[in-house]
Length: 363
Image 1: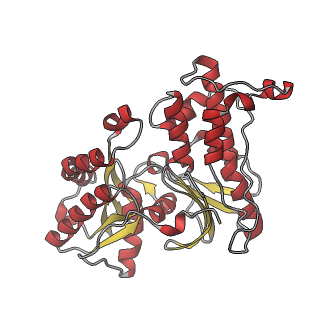
Image 2: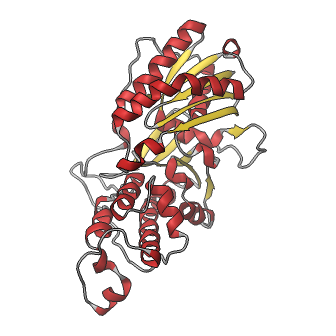
Image 3: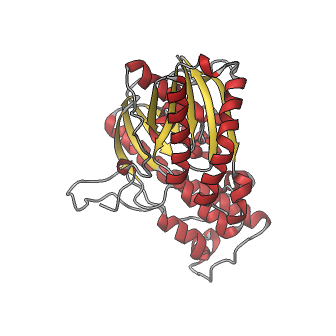
């Protein structure tokens, strides 16, 4: 079933065509140059750029796939979560397109689409990883959301643990912004960390393994506000040599250079990813599920990939690198599953900025 997928949940204007799980085209127009000077996404700019670009991006996705509008058999679009203004641009374009062509359309969950991305193959790229079998543990890691899930089917997901404050990608962006490492923060820190010493600073790991107000343990939750504070405001307290000597000092000034910057990046990256993996490994041990599927922009992180590749007893499946960040292919892929099952969305559907299940307050 040839399905067009449209993704405009944040600052990437993306469209793709998928047929039977094969990605025929995948076009992503990035807005990074427009947001770089602000070191973060400006929602008003993002939505205006989507309005300007969406027609051309969809047209290019069709041409790259060798298709005409009349060849499409369905349409899928991100309906939630994300920046509301950005979501509305893609959603209204998709509804108008589907109505004009008289084809079925479905609004999908951006986060479920990320977890589905590993089931897609890119045309001409050859087979890489095998399709993951259900159930598996989903590691959802992005700038807006971080969660560990049990996935029993493409649309049956149980959240085991989430962040109680910042998402992991958000923490990368904030640390990179403070020190002037570059934008986007995740890519900048990952690149800088390649030449750094991850043992130069020993940053703290949060301890959330206790009963919350609901009387239950929350061993799979994680937090990044403490790590962010340590890296930004208490750096000298966690420098390994000074910590061993028992002395502290004032915080480092922003924008360190050379080896110092690389050491900060490497040490922060190691701790940030280890926080994720501690909860993931607990979930794997407790559930007995040995297959892990990662999704989201941070799934492209080299340290995360290396750690999971070397973990005995776990099979980890990553999407192709170009399907880790926001893209239309994951939307088209999961949309195809819904449409084949007979699901449809009403033309009265509207966008929603949040999905409560994937983030929660401290228990």
